[in-house]
Image (cartoon, one colour):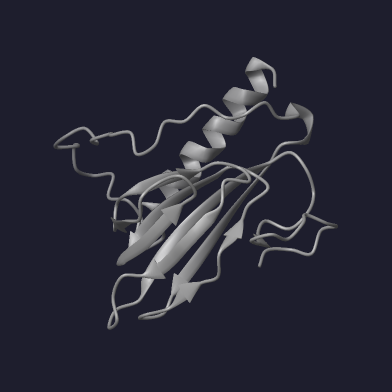
Length: 158
């Protein structure tokens, strides 16, 4: 991937994560009559080098995944790198080779392509949880496949 396409992909990822972290987006126009009181605070959520990818085929897909109270997802893999941001609630996650842990609202994670998403579950039995997943792909096909499955022709997100 050349430097320009890498920078473009990372800019799109950063924008998607910032958008996910802005719950009040679209809730009224900004008040331009007051002087700003304090500069916005910026803090990195995830910093991750991407694997080699075909820069001329890059596509970013941002999905909202809502887990009902107590809901789980089946073990699966993603053929593309994924950046996740917990927008609400708490999620129990385990990725291949890593211990299980709980990610709470405001936390983010990286999931390597073909890494194996072993556990995905709402950590609460009473409150929903909302995940914003940002996929960075350089190929067409499904964004998720069952563990042990193969990536085939495009069938859309699962």
